[in-house]
Image (cartoon, rainbow, N blue to C red; front, top):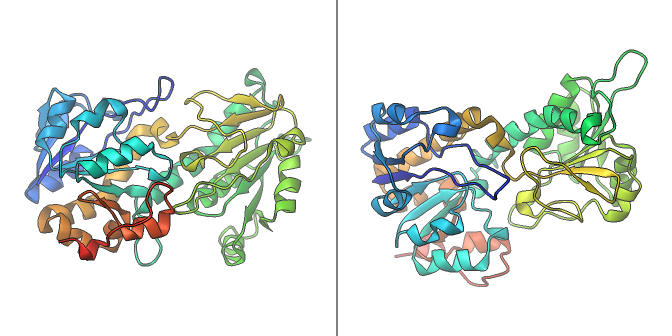
Length: 378
């Protein structure tokens, strides 16, 4: 098995991607398992890994992005191939990344189908117990980073409310409203509680709300996410964290322009659902250090790759989460690995150019209406 690790390209001019698909320690494990690994020159630079570390791990350094794609059977990335890379994707190859195909351009999916590629999306990989082993790492990192981002955006110099998250003697702490009680929401709540903010969590699942109340030991107010409650809590929030993820669907619009007009001036919305389209009616992608003002009063932040801001930690954590699945592919071959692993099977959206039934059933994709089950592929 020949594995390629290209250097990540920026998502757009203002949003770099500093993570690397595989770290040297994971490459060392894969090489010992029999893989041949090609790493693009300076692919690990943004994460603090130099070419020599990859060489010592057994990888071959190549100096052309096209060469990485052409020499490899399996491409391991963070972001999906950018348009500049589409012409490099090899027929019958496999591409693993956070693909987010539900919001991908039609021409990109058509290309992958026409080249008979296999596409494995990290965000869709899910074990039998419901754990999403790779996606949860990014969610945990984004959640833990929420307070440091929110604290910066609340500063007066950026047009925020000019308040401390934890307050100060004689003044109240910030009210933080978290919409979505999944992995990201939970870790965000823990982090905001840790700095002294008042935390309110809204979710549509009563059982999950009970779990959060117990896990957080009553340190956050737990609220059912009805339309009325979302409007009410958003109206007094200093910070709103949108942490909604619906597998296979575009994120629902939960915060309308009308709601924003009723929010405090200088309040901050951090829309971590932007990869799935965003939870805010005026959703748009922002850059790593940018907040935009919506409805002339609310600061809005929606970077699609927040974990890239801590690229080394993120690269290490993601590689560690991926390693067992990659070793399974290297040791057993792609088809057997997909059949043996629930997570790989659920993560496979396209198999040798055929859109999979599991992808269609879970993703409700607007472009395709019929697919082929992995087990039925010859």
